[in-house]
Image (cartoon, rainbow, N blue to C red):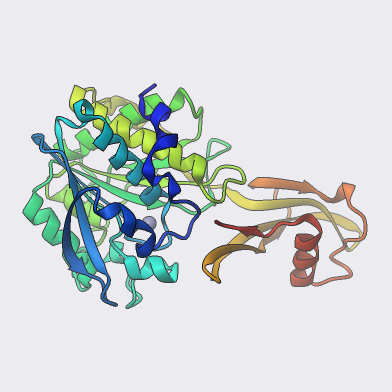
Length: 363
Ligand SMILES: [Zn+2]
């Protein structure tokens, strides 16, 4: 176990919570680090880089390039305060973090930026000011490693369990050759996986490595910088993703330990199972319908309403769903008065949602 787990609960960044993390919410942390404005968003918000440490190994990290993916922002700020308080741990590194690459998307709770562009499909063109800022930082800082920090949807599972964290060492070319940089990234992921398995058995996955030169990670990997994609996922009803945050941060600290101690485990990488689209949010069994019993799967639609995220159940699929898993399973055998013969899909979901309190509200 690394000492991060003992210290996390007292870190200043713990005041960040929920899923709606905006620029104004991280502003209070900026002055605690060496701060540099490296760009401006389409709507004029600052894009900042925080630097910590002055060791020889340079690591560039960025979070919230997709504005509605804030779990890693919460978690990476925890890591930053942990490093600030643990000088020996920080000693080998100079870390530069862009905690919020897409502040407009964060405000609007969208994946894309204010021009509707997915910044992780803009690596070739660099058409957006946010993408431009990231590449300028990359060129100036010349990192030895890059950590690309994201959230993934709730639909991902691994070997029949929810996938709480997944990783990728992106391809550097269409042939997916194991280049030296890919191998190093694989070695770090292998190390993180070994440590995580001691706590999260069977809930860690590996992403598909189809090469996409428009993705920022693939681009940096092709330039020879070992790059890791981190994806924070869903497990159970932790829709604020606080449990995920904890294990994500733990894994970042482990990644740093791996680099400092040269304990790369590339051979472990391919033993990590690939993520599958095998989960829904809610699975309802035994719904009475035309004299039979069918299953219904619901997925939450995330909506920004009055400054918080509302998770509204919507229909994903119905019929025989025996191959699908879910973060919550309901058996209607125990409930009277609900039938798909009497109500249409939308009315049925609404009634069930009211009866069982299925709508979630993030902090
Ligand atoms: Zn993302």
